[in-house]
Length: 123
Image (tube, rainbow, N blue to C red; front, side, top):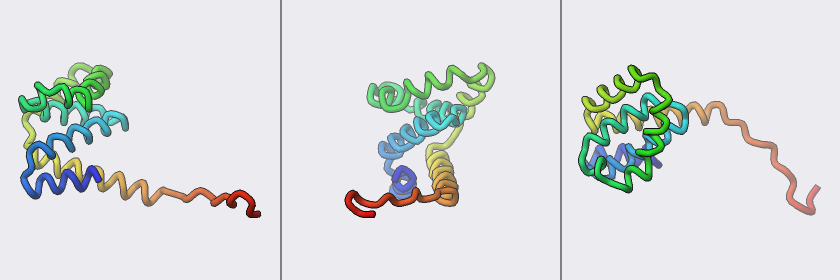
């Protein structure tokens, strides 16, 4: 759904939904251990005053991403910040949606269903 929200926001040029979806995607990346990518996205997002001055964005993603980014080496964190501030919002949204597509495809290819347990009273 996040992937679809990103693609739709780009397609219809919906600025605020694009910011929200990217913030949530950045938090997801940080939680998955892709901290450098998350820090890069957060740098892009926080370059917009709407995000930088928002308590909602800070609560939803910013604090978690910033805390995770503290684990990066200083030069890596600085490079992520610089790269993020120079990115285009729409291309970042498309790239993140593509990454989510890859993650979904990988998960689908490696997923194995659990054996079904009989319902209570059935043998």
